[in-house]
Length: 83
Image 1 (cartoon, helix red, strand yellow):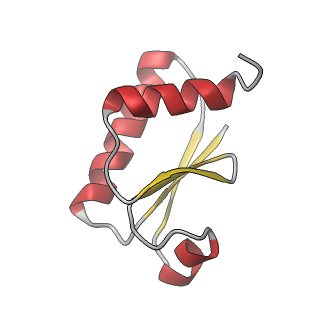
Image 2 (spheres, rainbow, N blue to C red):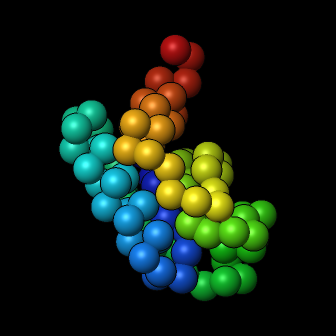
């Protein structure tokens, strides 16, 4: 699983990255987590408001920091697409 945090490095982006790492640890899922900070690269995903969460090249959330529960749900759904 490949996860990207979209954002320039603001507090909300840092918070989303922390929540994402915590969710992965709680779920026992191995994933690569990277940051996309260049505004042109962020816009290429169609995200106009950060932070954004991308799982396997699909934008699953953007515009605000999701709750830890929501991040776990998004990761679980991406890990089990047929469930």
